[in-house]
Image 1: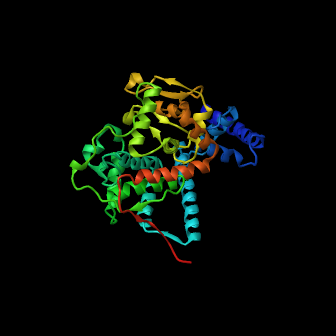
Image 2 (image 1 turned 90 degrees about the vertical axis):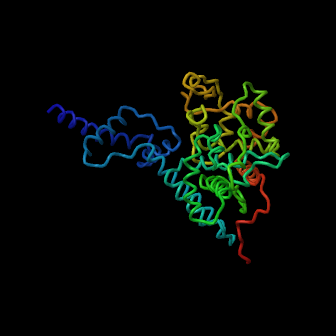
Image 3 (image 1 turned 120 degrees about the vertical axis):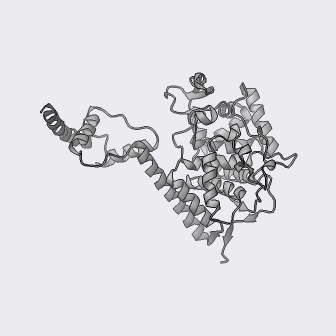
Length: 377
């Protein structure tokens, strides 16, 4: 009886709350409240609920018991991610149609899209895979790089730097079985297409990499950049040493690090935890904006739980983080010039990133063939 009375009161108050809520100047037009709520969820900043909002939610739960449970925030986020990706892909297809351009890799790309659409958070992982399968190159010895696709061998895949990549490597094997494509080509193609799906620039991709035939061709651990070498000068020197070994200059290094705008760190994989930005599956220049705009402080809370020291935004309750290496790009004067430029001009970053990422995915390769074909006019 008490429950019935309470429910009746809540329903009555809920109707009043609903009418006043939608009449509120905070909501314009009437459906704006839902729209704004969804957009806020997409940015990982759900709007604060006052008493009326809480009452409205409680009333809905009582008067609609026969309805399916409302979608969770993660479900809404997934749907929004899928919609954005579909829009980005449609835009690119229309552009190619206008140029009369076709891509030989299109059937493989469609399967990559299906794989990512099942779980849109796979997209940043595919970018990471492309980087890790390419970023082992040594221009002096000519070893490493994306040419042989050796990252699928256990002795390389199980290296500490590659922790968290095993599931996507195994999943891509299923796609490979449906097409005449090498693993080395597939890993780089998956990365560049994931960038495109997240609304990033079109990265030119060429094919013709030849897979290794034995595990002995894998690259020993230690060639990928590390996020912390103890202090800022040592970390800066390490970053330059690693990327210069591959043939990159300061501008290209800063352009490539902007890929941190997507994805997040997992403590179980790297010892670090959290996303760099709220747009984890959107490719934009927010990473540089955050680096330049926010103040970061040292965060040692993970060190007692098997994690490592990282940086968090002051006053944001550890929502977003930066690695020690990220802070180097902000504090090193030569790097900072490009951080500022890319924070102010996303189109400039897209252009420079596209060129640098193509260069990265072609390290150690030879005799690659064009993927895009333009019909004669």
